[in-house]
Length: 78
Image (cartoon, rainbow, N blue to C red; front, side, top):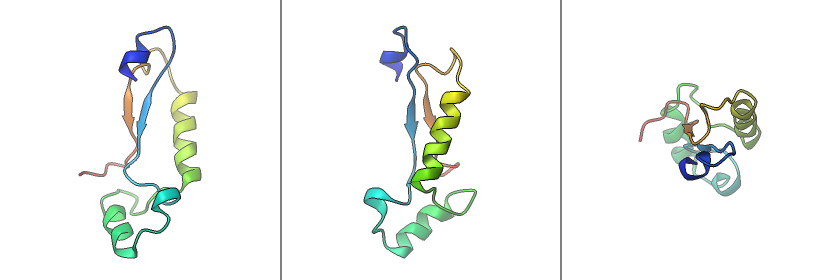
């Protein structure tokens, strides 16, 4: 995002901790619970919720967002 953000285009990097779906669809329940417990909402986002968050960032962007890396982990700590 930083390298492309300096060009005349908007570019952001988006990081999610864990999304409930895709390659994570077969996670064991105990692993899901461990990740969900680190989130303020107590749940993992679905792919649709993740897409909504990305759309929100794109719709509310400005020249200041270009080159940024945004963490949508819900406040999860490693």
